Length: 557
Ligand code: ADP
Ligand code: XUL
Image (cartoon, rainbow, N blue to C red):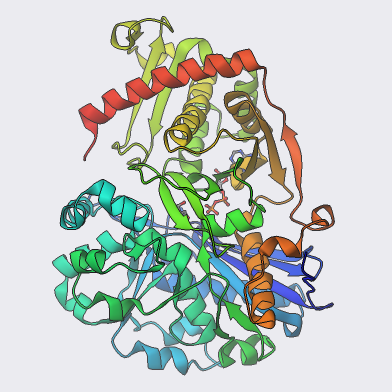
């Protein structure tokens, strides 16, 4: 194993610009957390008037955006908070970050000059007010580009072909269909755009005071990149919009250095001028890094605003439901992922309706009710769902007979038949049975261990349900914000690769001393009995059949 020495007394800063908040985590050279901070968009930047960090457009079906400037202001604010915590910025040798995946930012013609010449005496937000041709960035929750998805798939030879080329079929939230929508509906705005960034490369651009490259892993979440070659895919570019390649700039590996930190940050926060900014990437890829996932069979379940399931493989299969990205922490291999839009916000909704708005009551209900819920199952979609593509809505069923014919065997009953505790269990079992079913369908290996992260991984009763449904142990990390932790780890990794002049495996930084770092995980829920796992398997199959019926009846594709 190579010697992966990080200089004593140095610090590594990782951000996470997510849907509801901006987070920061600082690691020392032993990969221990020194400090962390969070800025919640709704409550701490109330003048943007977001709800859950976003605007849901009441006039345009499925349009969900966030104000780009809010992210700019949040960066300044979180750095000010870190100053208050007496963080020694001079010791930070590398910075990186996570962005919510797929969200895109549109820089107006002539904005590079504004970015390069930021004056450290005035807040960034006051200098970039006029820098964007679109002030509200489409984000991952948006589902308003169905038409463009269809057009792009048709132009490249179908959904599966696009998935084979770019790692995913066309998805409304992906930047490619969003860009095409802007090109079609606001051609003058598209013409007035000199650069398109993802949230990740946008934040890196602020930090280096120039346009940063899009990294190859987050770039794969656009329906525009050839995942095998790690280059822009000509046919997808052509199917999306003219003159796109020059607006996207170049791609770079996630471990590459984007540049030195800009004078704005050196003068305003006293960063060392030699501090490196390592390419930012998506929040899920950085979580994969932060959870130290590097063996097939390790499965991560992230329970944040969205729920995601991911692991690594050397042999990804193109599919219509999963996503394939280049491995963010290696030059070889792939990350495979499933994404649900109805994650924490839907759990909160059910908690608020049925469990006195309290996680404690929610957990008690989950503990009180028997596994399999007496055949009561539910599909809870507060928002239009991605997996499967179904509109917002609530569908409850009671399976009378587990072995009977699916449509004869189930009856859709009145809401009253579900008391509050079984409502909670139906939601949780439904969410995790769906994950188990789709992970199997995508060819992900049966998990040997699951690592849970994200806000809801703090809930032990949820973790117990996961362990029973998947039939394997569930681990948690010391802190649920693995995306900013992973970003700090990737900052260290990028620094090391740069120092060496070539790629080194990320694991060499923590191998053999994992338990001494802040990356170690602990066993939080143990696998349930095998018989229950088998019975959950049967319930899962029934649920898939019902899901398929719902998609046939209500799906939009
Ligand atoms: P983000 O995707 O914005 O980074 P987080 O990972 O920070 O989201 O997760 C935030 C979510 O965590 C909240 O929306 C909340 O519903 C959920 N959460 C927090 N505590 C609990 C709990 N004890 N049980 C279930 N969910 C929780
Ligand atoms: C991933 C996705 C979400 C966002 C949330 O494809 O859409 O998980 O990354 O921030």
